[in-house]
Image (cartoon, rainbow, N blue to C red; front, side):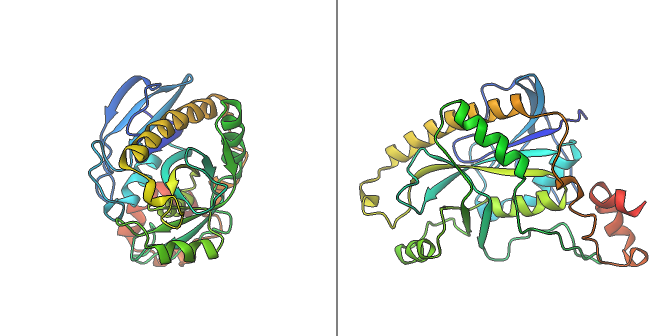
Length: 287
């Protein structure tokens, strides 16, 4: 299986990348089941990458149905060190307009019962998550967005809701009162699991509309949303291509050491089955 260092997760509206050349498809098995779809391995800006459609081609999988562990584990198995994750979001602030690009550096979890850790089954680990995205990726992607002329906000808070229904107006106004910036349904679990897998991670949040709090909400049509999704897809691809082109080969952040002090369980008490299942992630700390 070919090893690649850069992973791309495409969300609503971004199911493929036209710039991906020399492509092939690969199925990746994981101890946690099947990822959302086959990975497309190809070249972008002269670098080999792995692309995954988060909801599957044809958008078949609800946010609550996503196998986040399989998706991130499969990235790790492919050798991925950095993940750029595109996601459609709603805006919770007047100044964040449709077609803007937001690079959140914080998350708030409003999901219920989703599995967002590789650990358990006899192995306890607690990773630091105060700063949940890779600072190096944040800086690089922001510069890339500026370079290609896409209006972007560096930083902000992404509220991750359960879905699949959108918020009530009361909920939307509550989140605004908390100071949240954008709202989506998928990226928190990806960020947590990527941190546990010691993979650099960044959300590229693509604003399609104002959430239902906005006075113009009722004038928003399905056609407008689809049009925004299509433009956002073009913007996301331009930003991703420029980011990949400009990324240095070696990482300078500390994401690759996230588990150094996180494994709490006595090494002699880790069940063999758990040790084998997570060897790809924890093996270097157990040798």
